[in-house]
Image 1 (spheres, one colour):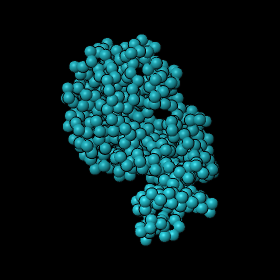
Image 2 (image 1 turned 180 degrees about the vertical axis):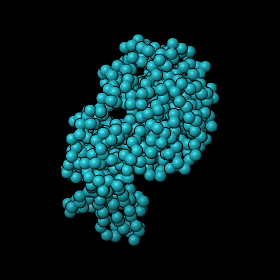
Image 3 (image 1 turned 90 degrees about the horizontal axis):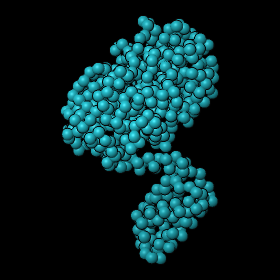
Image 4 (image 1 turned 30 degrees about the horizontal axis):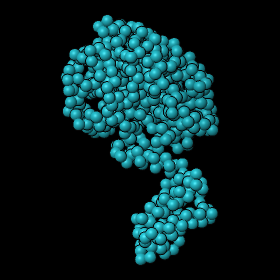
Length: 529
């Protein structure tokens, strides 16, 4: 999520989500921090969406909770995906559909939209003109010369803007470390065909629910090899229905059937397309691997993971692959076959764009720090002055004045956790730390009964442990640590209930840290006799 500010008005470009890592148990998604704009929400003139992937549109429902009538600007397919998402949140948006070649003004911002290709159709770059200068933001893009939908990235438009003078070029960095040019989507057709030609039984394809181009390839292969197709997973069914209705997905009549209809067909005539290519615990493929889904993987089934491994998800994905293999499936993935091509420009394409646009200032966007730095190095090699290439992180404020971009400060930009129905709040980070501690070290509850007149325990304390192995030696050691601490405290004064709870927790924590190098979550409860 990027916020542009000019003449007291705010323009937002993209509003996506991050997905939780293994160190963030129980978290649904992670949002941008809206705290900077919350007090100025009436100054927002529009939110512009470059394409329909979750990491660019997933936060829109939460943004519109702040103010429901913010104009949401995007291409036909992007707005269709957003609308379906907002319907689930019971929000009626104010949509403004645009397409490549159009110009629209929102407040002091004059926007021009340019076609870019990516792993989802209908992507847009956006040129933002103001009195302060011209910014070109690419969104996620690549320069596929043979795109499935014949929609090329508008390089002549990039060059025209370069002639006009681009003051700040914001470019996709995801593949900046990869040399050369990204393969075209067509290049994976032989590998997909090989899977369909050799698979003896069912083929289960896992992909992102918005990866229309890849799913088109699977549908085409199914048609060529006389297999019926069924979509599995709510988001997959919804998105593909939208894409087909709008003409972005082309499905031969009668090819797609309800999943229940496959039970009456031979396994060799079946293709299933489902979610879960990143090992998400609740997605269809993970549940199949865990034998928790109505579709049971069996000997001779072929599972095709038609997407990349997102950094940080590797362990989850390999866990799913192991589970599927255990049940007899042949798992085909990027590591053993050419079944995936990236949707992002590689280094050669980025250099091409820098030479085409000749920007005065560059700010790499999208990707991790190493990707941003690699992209910055490419810009410098093409002649952009090093001082005018800004590698920034969330919350950094950049001013563009008289054609010069400078870092001038920071605003709050913490991660905001969505945990069930709870969004953000101070407790989220604390709860997350407790969950991680629980998963590593378990929990211990200490129960004591206190004689308030004497400050002594009426009977020995009780311990209730979860996720931590306790034996007699542990109980004796923990009891002794409490007794020693209680005797020392009572020499000074008679302790009351709250003080005793704190004493229990601190004494057992210190003892366990010394003895076991473990610190479980300790909860102490003291009741009066």
